[in-house]
Image (cartoon, rainbow, N blue to C red; front, top):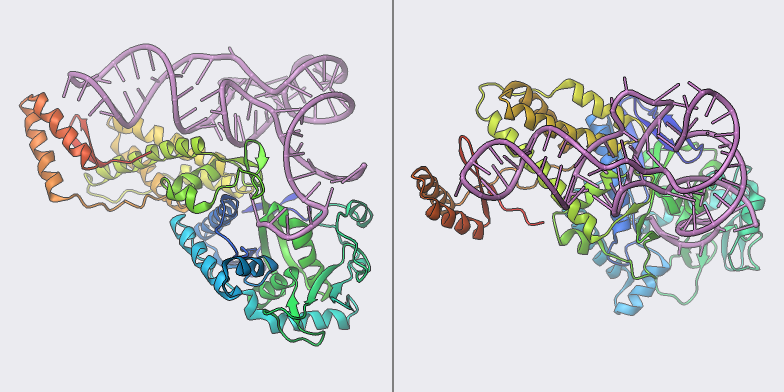
Length: 458
RNA sequence: GGCGGCGUGGCCGAGUGGUUUAGGCAAGGGCCUGCAAAGCCUUGUACAGCGGUUCGAUUCCGCUCGCCGCCUCCA
């Protein structure tokens, strides 16, 4: 049974899908006005891992993640780059998907765009106004948070303490500083839509409510995003949905931040690193492993040295899997995974996605498998190795170069070296080994003969 | 000011009232090897400080110090 921490209750709760066998999950996606940074990478990886695990457990996962393609930041950027806002959005959305592909992140099952939902948003706003949950002011339509009795649920604060701490500029047009805009009336701006309230554009908090409910229904299982989205974004989404009498999300899942030098990574500081920079410089799986080795709700330190550490750890996984395959090719049966290890893995993952323990289990299994192969216990080693392959794949860590082809000149050089080595002509064999290394191939001499492996740069 | 979290061995990072105190990387030693690589074995005796509860606390409680996040756009 999968259990997850619910930000709404502060408790770890059992995931009880509304529909048997199907998990409906909405994850707040990016506003596409710039290249994604490693913070985006974390939330994407965390929810990708959750999804892969749920699918491994036999659930069908309906995974919706939006693209916010209308926002003040996009407009600002459009001016700066001298492009249309829609051009900015599609440009950075393209970068977004390219980067996620490098990270081996599964595409959501649906990717709604805010601009495709303007009519639906207006419909929701009108309904909120009709129910007197929202009011029309001179510069827009505002949601009246005082009408929601448990406003502050996700912030874990009372209305009074939220009010006391509010740092929002006073706005004469709002009844409470915490009221948020549903429809922003803007004249003389190029990217606006008609509405009963005047030309303008929707507020950010409305789009996710509309899109989530359109694609997942009035109630769904998981709503996720970064920890900073809990308040006010998710609070405000929830306020709108429950104002319509809907249950909305059952479990709210929020991931922790990326920190560098102990501080939250942000654009205003110099600790800002873009995702393409990070994953482009080395094996993109390194970042995924780093994310896996910390709990998703903890802050996570990321820097170049740690990425290198993870890359080395990845080599351990890869060479273990290569070793498993060599042994698997020598037996006449198809190995089956060791059950105990799969069960232990699931037990950890079921416990609020305890990926640190789950990955530790994989590394422990690698040691065991190697030990078994070392002493000739091939069958037991294969069962464990088979489990390793399965679990590594569940976590999205499977190597990209699994089915590698060896160029014929490399094979030739390798065979020459084997011969030289058999003749104990170590000088020649060492030269050939160097030659192969220059071509990107490593030779390891085992008892049974040389093994050719692609060179992995760290 | 309000709310929440954290301080673990060289680094990252889990976890737990006491049996073997994860895991990764790095470091030392050993085995294997023509050399290497990979692998295996092994060492490090960590839990901010001060009190309290307890037979026993890193783990529970209190206080102190330090750090961080949210309360505004933000993954």
